[in-house]
Amino acid sequence: MMTPGFNPRHSLVAGIIWLMVALAASFAIAASIWAGGVAREIVVQQHVRRLVLETDQLGSDLGQAVSMRLEAIRALGGLPPLEVFKRLRGAYPDLAWIAVADAAGVLMASAAGENAIGHLNSGDNVSTAPWFSEGLQRPWIGVIGKSTSPSAVPLLGDLAAPVRDESGHITGVIAARLTWHWASTDVQRLSNTLDTHGSAQMLVLNRAGVVVVGPEPLRNAAWNGLLVDEAPPIEPPLDRTGAPRFERLPAGQTVLVARAPVSIEGDGLRDAWQVQLSEPKEIVYQRANALAVRIVWISTGLGLATAVLGALGARHLTNRLKSLTRSAAAVGRGEIARIEVPSGHDEVAQLAAVFAKILDDLHQERSELLKLSGELERRVAVRTREVERLAEESRYAAVVRERLQIARDLHDTLAHSMMAMLSEVRLLRRLQAHDPDSLPDELARAEQVAQAGMNEARSAIAQMRVNSVRDTGLGPALSKAVERFNDRTGLDVEFDVDPEAARFGDERAEVIFRMTEEALRNIERHAAASRVRVALRTVDAAQLELRVEDDGVGFEPEASRPGHFGLVGLREQAQLIGAVFEIRSAPNQGTLLRLILRIAPEPL
Image (cartoon, rainbow, N blue to C red; front, side, top):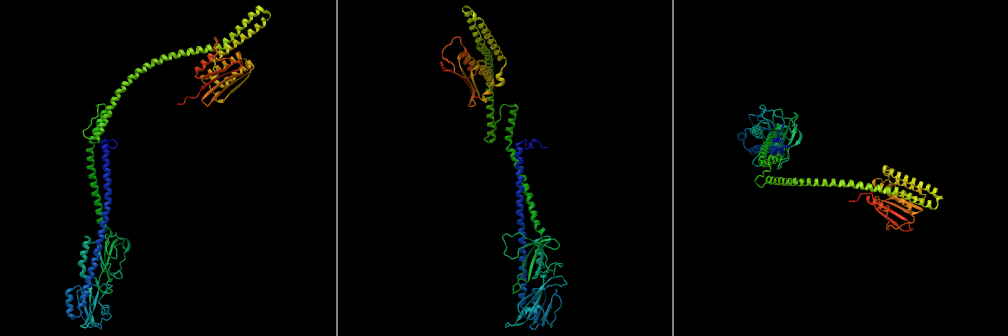
């Protein structure tokens, strides 16, 4: 389990260190892979370039050596045979034999070396030999197709040139057989230069691609390597025709092959031979791969060293931040009262100064908040007492409103009934004095008035106990009230209500219902009307409008009526629910009572 000091989730310093390690490692690996690839390619190109240059050099050296020997044979053709043999043997001991024949093809003299194959004797006819027929016409080199040297020294071929007299006429042919013995030192030098392990192989191929110089298993056989891929391009490119390439041998090994022609002066001699150097592919890439691996390890080591140095530097640079963190944590635990601000002008010092200022401001705001809280508590206590007082006054106001309501109900029921009974009693007294015979009929009428008053009182008491408006809505309640009014009076009554207004049924609906009943009673007793219209509707889905109209005798709304409280009660009830109440009337003009109540919330 990772300790908190090295866990990037718990420590910013650890996060920075791990980030630097990751970045350094990533950059080191990426750079090493890239640099290793570039170095590997460069090394392979250098290896291929050196192999090509050595092949060209070897072909040039071989061509120059053969050309020198051919030129020497041609130049010495006019000397006596013994002198020719002496000079050529002394200069070029690698010649297997030397012979001189006349123009008819009769061998005049010969000298055999230590690598001679077969014997040539004076007087032998060599006119059918290729070296004689070709050398009689021009300097010639003939490639030997098969080596039969008992000493396993490869034979390159026969050299021949015409012998001319002082006048320039051809008098014969001088010839010599060239072996590969002279070049063994150069081949070993090249092999050691290309590969210290001796893996490079040198071959000499004739025009037909047959190996004439090389290991015994390959000699006198055609080279049978198959093309696999071209070798990496050489930068800068060399001025040569044949590019190196990778070939696969029958045994399965892949080798890098470079070929160069043997440059021999003379007509038809330039493409007689070609030198081939080959090296296994794994040897070609061995040094390049080793260098790439070494670059990877070196870059990785440098990256790790950079990461370690960066981590130490980051740890040193973040010590101030760590000290600030410890100081802030101590403030949070309540161990100290203020953040320690380090010296300097860097970001850590600025951050600490900002934190210290914020903390001081918080302390000051906390103190002010405590003072404000105490003041609020004091004000809340004052307001609580005020609310309690207002609540008490509100309860008293509710009682007063209930008393007024009861007074209005008594006025609307008992007062009217008692007024009617008082009128009947007065009438009875007058009849007793002036018309005793009419007294029984008036007594019966007085009984009916008293019974009607009793019914109205009971109805008022029932309405106080049961709230039909809340239960059914204002529309149905008004419909029943209008129906009862129609049954009592027999007047032509029109009732109009829309569905939205009919559903209205809160506590304000009870007040509107009672006001409507009061208006109908006033029409019944005072208006002497023949037609009545009651309408309840909503206006713009925000207001409720009640209209009660009659075509009765009308009156002056502004006239004073001592002892009559009907209109006063209607205005009080409208004011109680916040409604607008108006009366339009005139003598013999009928009466209109209009009530407008806002039922939707006021827009903000």
